[in-house]
Amino acid sequence: MSRAQATATVNHAETSGGYDPSFFNELAAIEDRHFWFRGRNALIRQLIGKICQRQRPGYFVLEIGCGTGNVLRTLRQTCRGGTVIGMELWFDGLRYARQRTDAMLVQGDVRRLPFRTQFDVVGMFDVLEHIPEEHETLVAVRDALAPGGKFILTLPAHQFLWSYFDEASRHCRRYSESEIKKKLNEAGFRVEFLSQFMACIFPLMWMQRKIFRGHQKKAGDARTLAGKEFRIVPLVNNLLRWLLNLEAGWLARGHTLSLGTSLVVVASKV
Image (cartoon, rainbow, N blue to C red):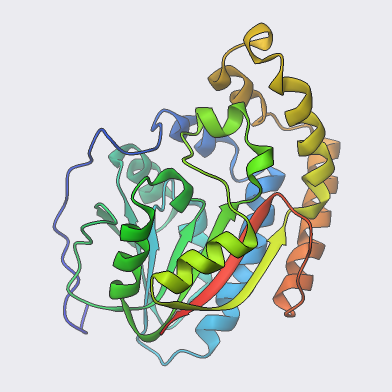
């Protein structure tokens, strides 16, 4: 790397992280086919593509919390002309990421980023909700960005959708649009685009969460219930993939959605 070398110093993962690394095995087995992950990737691909088109050759892109490399692979394919780096706290995820992409991989903690360079684009995709030190994390991301750099993130929406899945996933919170905008502003960002997405699955999730909320103990523990959501039903999976691709195209054209189970945000460093 040229613009002040990014160090490859490895920070050992801390066991206090807000994520269960045993999920990596299940995720790696289904991410390439499951409608949720493919739909999110379709949206990220289009939004990040527009951002990177405006970058000068040689720009730097960092994904924080790259996990198994499912999104990182999409970034590597989309951000041509740039250097893409994936960082993950847990080595369990990096083992899978190495099989999926040739992007540089670093094990590290977002609160102590092991880089000497600043990045033109930073992504966090369903990561912030796992981190108790929310403001500290956002400030660290801001400091890692070059002047005018872009921050793109996805998050789970609506606290009223909190369920066994959030508990099993070790989420700290779900977000409203006004809440994440306020927190980004406080950390030194200007929000340029903010929308809900995954609108087509909102009714399904709302009903499912309502049904299981009062029967979690009878139906099984949170981890077991969450695992069932990774099942792939081909016909339903293909239909939802198609609908989410339509959503991605709509949002990429600058429109927004007023309903969804997730949020997508593009912000810039002030």
